[in-house]
Structure formats: C-alpha cells, structure tokens
Image (cartoon, rainbow, N blue to C red; front, top):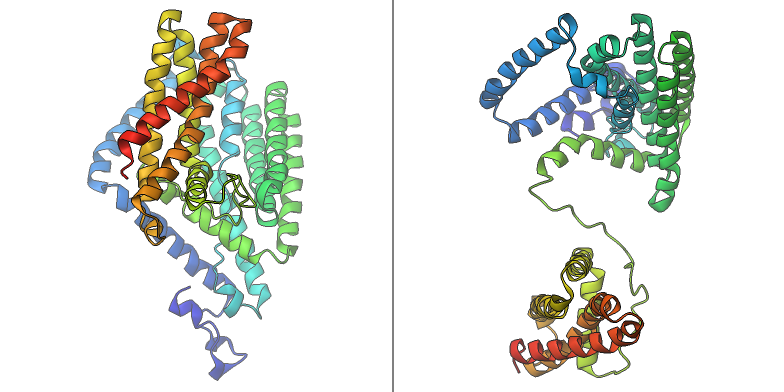
Length: 430
C-alpha cells in the first residue's frame, strides 16, 4: 500500500471527509485501478520494445483487417466447410475456463481499513464489476473474430449469433465467479474437488446448449438468463463472505502477476511449493538397518534424491525412455543397449552424489572422504538396482517368456550391483 493510501485516516479531523486522503471508497478504488494499469503496462514494457511492436502490430493489423473484410464480403475459405460447428463452442469454452478475478485488495487493508468494512465491500464490488467487464470485452473480441465463420460459414442468423454472444458472456461471468469463490474458500486437494465441477459443469452446459440450440435464439437467451441469475447470486454471496481476506489478497496477487508469469515462464523455473512434510518418507524413518554414520549418510542422500521432484521426475523419465528404447530394438541388441543405458544412469547418480556430498551444508558434518565414499558406495546400488531390474524385465520377458519372469530380477540385480561398484570405485575418492 502506498503512502497516500496509508494516510487514509487523519486523526486531526476525525469523522470529517476532509481528513481523508481519499474521501470516498470509489476514489480509493479509482486510484488503485490506475496503479494496476500502470503496473501491467510496466510489466509488458520490460519484455516488449514498442518501436519493434509498431512494425509488427501495424502491418499485422492491416493484413488481419484485410482478411477479416474478405471473410465478410468474399467467399469463405474451403477449409471452413470441413470443420464442424461444435469446435467453435469448445474453443470458446476453453477460453471461458481461463482467467480469474481482480478485486484490487491489498494487505494493508486489514490494518488501515479494518474499521471501515463498507469501504472494503465497495472496493470488492467495483473490483468484481471491473473484472466482469474485462471478461466481457475479451469474450466479445474473440466472438467478433469468429463471427464471420458463425454467420456465413455455419448459417446462424443475426439474432441467434447475438443470443450466443449473450450466453457466452454470462457463462464466462458465471465460471469466473464460481471459480473465485472456490479458490478463496478451499485449499489443497479440496480446492480441486470443488474447482473442477465449478468450471466444467457450466462449460459443459454451455457447449451442449450452443450445439443443440444454435438456431433457437430464445432458448439461448433463456440459458443466458440462467447464467445471469447465478452471477447475481454469486456476487451477493461474495460480498457476504467473511474470513477470507488473506485468500482474497493471495488470489488477487496471482491474477495481477499472470502476465509477468507468462513472460518469465521460459526464463525462470517455477518455485517449488513450501511443504511442511515431504510426500515420501513423511516420518523420516530410518531407511537402512545399520546405525553406522556411513549408513545414515547414505540414507540421507537417497532421501534427498527421492524427495526432490525434479530429480525424481528425471529418474522416471529416463527409465521410461530406456524401457521404450530397449523394447523396440532387435533382440540381439537389447542386452547391449541395457548395459549402455545403465552406465549412463550410474554416471548421473554418482554425479548427483558428488554434488550432494560436496554441498556446503554437508561440509559442516565431520565426515571424512573415506566415509563419504563408503556412504556413496552404499547409496548408488540402492538407487540403480530398481532401474536395472525393471529394464531387465523389458529384455527378459520378450526374449525368454516364462523363464524371463524368473530371471529378470536376479539379472537386473547383478547388473546394477556390478555397474554401481565399478563407478563407485572410479569416481569416489578415498
């Protein structure tokens, strides 16, 4: 919250409108809305050069306008006759399911506007209306682009197209509000249990109505009226909802940062969510029976790999690719390919162990090089043998049939142990 907004209350003129930096809630909302626009434009300017965009937007707009005018005045492209009408409602439904609500609430409101709940409700109502207006403009723009295909390509009348537009806008409002209500009230897997039906049910009803009532404008308007009634109920329910302020602020921040997230998706990795307990080994129980320091250190390294989603995903991805590669090659090459892939997996696992053992945090612990090498020699076979055993099954079962079911586990174990000991001897310094 800015310094001007923090000065909303002036103790020298208690109770007088002249003592407020923003005398009314609408003026405070207008200030925040302008700040929101400036924030979004600043984010876009960091990734886009307006001089370059002019050379792309102006020619692109002229060319697109020429094609659009041609769709209205000339003949429709031949490929439009091969596309069924149901794809248009599905495309619009996919667009409806995206996006969210911006209420323009801020963290400081819990302190500076705590005694003025009517101000918060006023800002929230205007934020809802602003978000619905932006959604309507977005859907209307997409609908206008598709309008030549709807009217000329599929033969809908002007009244039916207008009714379909009304149903599209009201359905998008309904989905946005229902999804917002779920997001601010539920967390974890319960959010998805409620969010999936809150989004899919209105979208499915929209697609069905658009397909079966495409030429019946009155039925489309009736469906739009039903969506509108749900929108009115959702707005009233949202304004009466209590104890969701922090969730409101969190969801508001997510929506404001959507553009920044899209621009930085290919540059920065998505931050890992903070978890109080890991998914695997939740109770941190001992992994190995031995209580020697080397065994405890080896168990810590195994847990570090398994609990890291990126490492675990890479492990299973490499295993899946290896299974497919071994399965499709001729039988005479399967064992050789298994050995080569197992060598690659062992090299990656030993590289991971060297990074883990050489970490600054691990350096605090009083482990010698020999103890670290012994711990790595114990951890690498445990991580490699499951890979070699499963890949050995892909080799043995197609080649040896029922005998392969008996042989693949012992053979995979022997291959994994031999390669693990070989790499441990070569790469771990004692």
